Length: 240
Image (cartoon, rainbow, N blue to C red; front, side, top):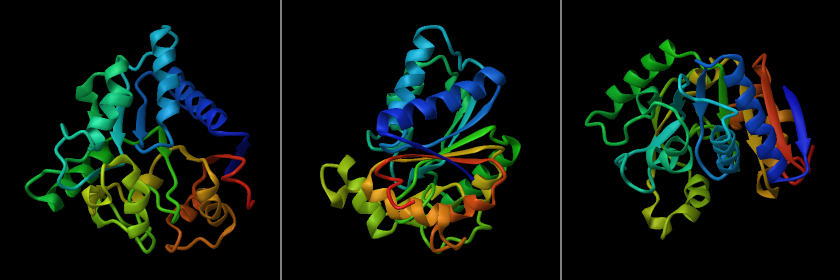
């Protein structure tokens, strides 16, 4: 795993945007695996700016997202489908028909997971972007998730619910279930970029990079990927 330590969130975001833009310029039909949450927001803003300046085009890019809350419709302002439109898709020249996110309101969630797994098999990602949970989760693969798993329904850990509650009016409003790419799906990507910012991620970063490869820290599996890059700011990398 390549480790890149930068000063702060802004520099982490710049390096993240550079990785995405280089991928798309090299292959205009690239498949991007995208993440939500606070970590990639500035990365997405920088990509929007490049697109607005005519330096980058997503016209032929295809995108697959990591996860979605169970029970939230795509129009719900806390859904990840809404997040992606608000923070990226509505501001770039991507064709929304080429964007894919699990449906949190599918009548049969298990069937939806199977559909998404099959879709991912047809769309090998050139670059997969990941954030890092404070408990080491990637996507919504919580500690204890088998490394061999494919897209599945997960009950979110209390620490994850707490971390995500900042985006909701009340912690009680945070969904307790989600659909997520499995760890095996994530590992299928040709290149993986994981980004971490802030002191609350320091232990997870240490466990990811220097800890035992163990399902107790899902992100530690990235030590086994042949092209994984971690970009961490100084606070997140403080234990390395």
